Length: 410
Image 1 (tube, helix red, strand yellow):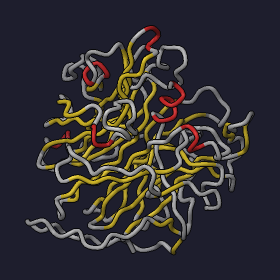
Image 2: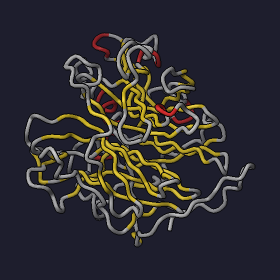
Image 3: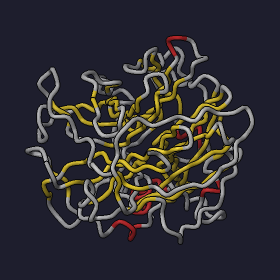
């Protein structure tokens, strides 16, 4: 069971066939005051030009980024461009031990060329005993009605080491919050405002599963609907000796009016489980959209069984792809038939992912169109010193690479 926990709580991504040219700025559909019909919905297709972004090799401090994971995207209407936040490690070299976890921001007007900011959007705490000396999995939302210094909310996963029980290979993640006035650099919620009296910390496993012996909450994805923040995230709880019995595992849902104090709606969300009677059968790495024009929620998640990813040569937070569900209220979701084909599945023959696919899919909306970003493991244009762990044994030259697929976008 623990092997399944480690696999499912890792990340999410996607895959499909076919490629088309990809250039130009996307149009935008303004929402009417009444719900528009769904209309015809296309399929996700990879776009020609993958991979789009590799870890950046040059910064003003002379260091480089050595990783790329957990993309979170949004369409900036005012600037007419896409923005993506992602996790990486900033270090002297690919093999050095001085790496620091940071969250980066990059922008693109055409989905082809991405410009990475010199300064991190957020850096892991330098305090050795801080709860978030490791940070990952950012999600950012703009709230035009929030106070100016809190216009942008970032939620992220943070940890200070591994989950402290035998058989688990996962950081002991909790969820933190940071705010920004301009959406480029973020400041943690101060300890004085945190419900846990720690800078940044806003959601813990004990809040989500108060009767469990321990747990993990991670991979946040946030949307804003009618002034309320809705957070969907990976959740896991366990009990017993060495926390050896898994009690719950799946996507959970919480709400907040300020981004700091969270109310648990469902943990896990029953309608997203493989089997509704089995609270350990849920997926992870949710990506959620609320389509205002059509008054409808969409959610993508991973839910891999151990055998689903064994064909991928690289072993690092793998996924075989993602499934989709939809909802009218954000609480009750359409049943996912896990026997059907995924919305996007790993395909070894596709550029940017021959060595595998990393969990952590992201889907962003621009009107009725959808942009999907996913990280593949590539063996082309590999930076010197970049190695990835092989499933069998040892390492191979390879690099995590950001790839693009779209649905109903030009």
